[in-house]
Image (cartoon, rainbow, N blue to C red):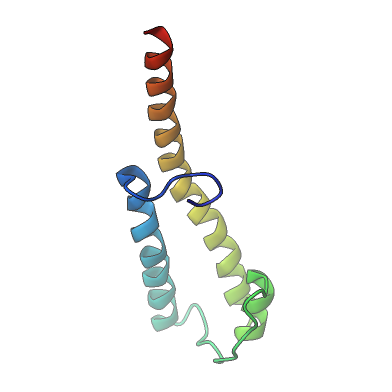
Length: 99
């Protein structure tokens, strides 16, 4: 369960859980290969480091900007699936209330 949302045996939320990070990794790799993003410095940042600050520590402002844009891209990717799961839960709740 993540923040009160059941992820186990929930196919609707399994799709973004599995694929969104892989898609963002592929985009970051492609942008690095074509030269838009610099290669990371390999600095081991602490685990609790905020994403934008860690981007600056890893290389440059471009990495920090990509992390910032990626944050909103992940939010947009998850939003559709959360709303779908919420709609299904509301329909189930309304059906049980009318019986």
